[in-house]
Length: 267
Figure (cartoon, rainbow, N blue to C red):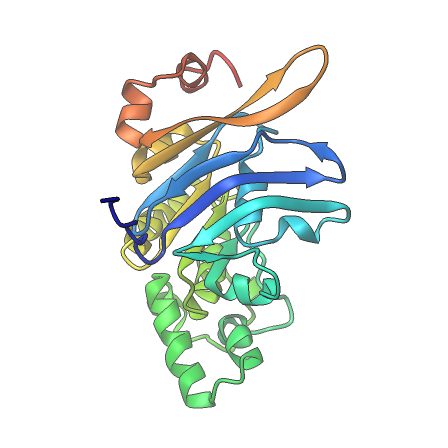
């Protein structure tokens, strides 16, 4: 008798032959891997190796680039996020994203920065109030802003702005939270606060972070995915070369390219 297939746990992201394209140009060898739930998974590798591209494929932002498209599958649980008829906007409610530069909406207050998605969803005011406070608490920002919710989000410090953007994503109650170099524009103290927040958030969400900071990846991630660029005279293409528990990747990598990158000899 064949063994029945085991259903993936909720929040599991599975990539099956994921192949981002720009027109007919292949930029990345097809990626097949699994990102486990309730963990922090770090994408590392030199600039231009495809890690942010893969991140954008997970919430269907890659296809927003003119001429770009994706083949293969991205599964959230058992559901293919690229299935025909599934609107990208619905995917992005389930797969939130925070970008490299904090991007509060300039014309909106702190409160409305968090509330905007809820209002677009037609939530009643009582629910908006509850979820805005909950999201600011989850983002470890409530105590710092509760007395100035009507002030502009732009009045906050850079680190506070980034946590505000995390609160905005959290308010939509996603299953997955993608973070594209979220600390690269922050000072060390603000970076530490965001890192502490990420570690707490993994108990609620599947977390994927792109980072160039090896110390950051080692500090906060549970799993590490190593991307590289293969250059020859004929072509340049990116590829996923190794995945595994972060402690193993950083102390006993199996691929020599991983060891060379982590030690600073390449990249």
